[in-house]
Amino acid sequence: MRGLLAPDILRMWEAGGDRQPIERALTLLAAACPESSLEQLAALSISRRDSQLLELRQRTFGDTLNAFSECPQCAGRLEIRFAASAIKTTGDNRPDVQEMESRGLTVRFRLPNSVDLAEALPAGTIDRAREALLYRCVIEARRGEAIVAPNELPPEVSEEINRRMAESDPAAEVRLDLQCPFCSHAWQALFDIAAFFWTEISTHARRLLREIDALARTYGWGEAEILGLSATRRRAYLELIGA
Image (cartoon, rainbow, N blue to C red; front, side, top):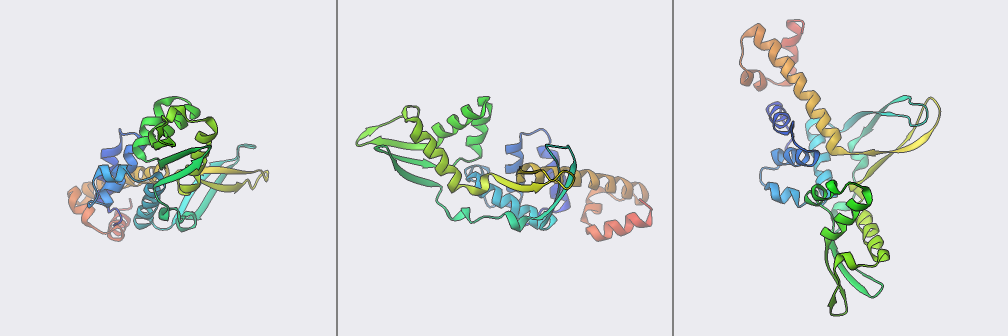
């Protein structure tokens, strides 16, 4: 996997502007992993997908992540700074397809991927989305030789499958432990690498466009010429013209 260069960032920003968040995540990975098809990337479990996005973010912008959060108690604004390497997990080594025994049933299931999430999101509520994921991810359920349909599973078995999925896909939901410096309130905030990375891509793309505009007006260079310069040289020329 290689990091995204300036032309890649502009291309990804342009291509992903009107797409859904899940599609944007896959668009970013596809640019960095040309050896993998979009279908292969979409079939990755959410944990594997997000681990690769995190690695791509490190290769593109470095290990340090800067973010902001609002205290749910006093509405104070917190600046958060942490290392991407600190939230990496070893979940990638766990199999995507698993089997469990529960209440006389043998169930084979797989971990959710991007396609599953895209299909479950329109469900409307969290419970319905979870139910939609379960139906998609249960490969087979048997009681002896008899096949049991996913919608016929006992509630206790469904709950255990959901729990097993969460335990087996730890990086699919990363939570940060935060404490407000103003009122000392402590809480957990969900960290979504796909959304975070896309926000950075959008911000960086707009900055690149401003740089291209300033240098093109001053020197008459084309976009390709400007993007062909290293970031250090672009900054040096921008300092010369006071931009």
